[in-house]
Length: 123
Image (tube, rainbow, N blue to C red; front, side, top):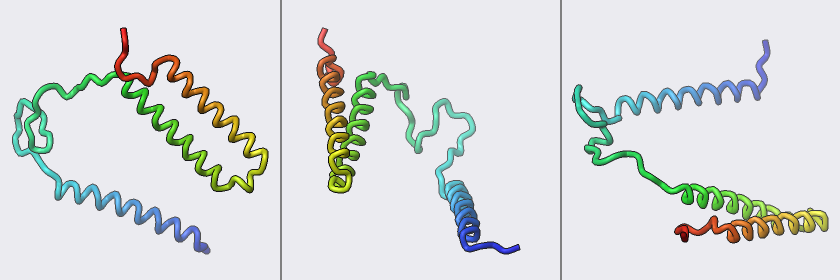
């Protein structure tokens, strides 16, 4: 049975991946913090006694703004990639990016019109 170079590289990759995972698990077990108390009334959080409730009430507006930020950030990345290869894309690419920018502006207009980006809701 003959093993080619790519198969050997893949097997070495798999071996080292399992080795790194195993090493991290063992190192975490050996070097990690432990609680030596059997019956404690509160959770062990990095050796610090917890105060209050762990559940915070975060408004949904925060999540929406974070999602919009990520979406517009990725769209800015698309614009950067287009600007690198603008000559190769020609007029077809230019028209396509004009539609793309128009859809971005239309989306931003919709967000402003519906007061989605306002943090404090006026009643």
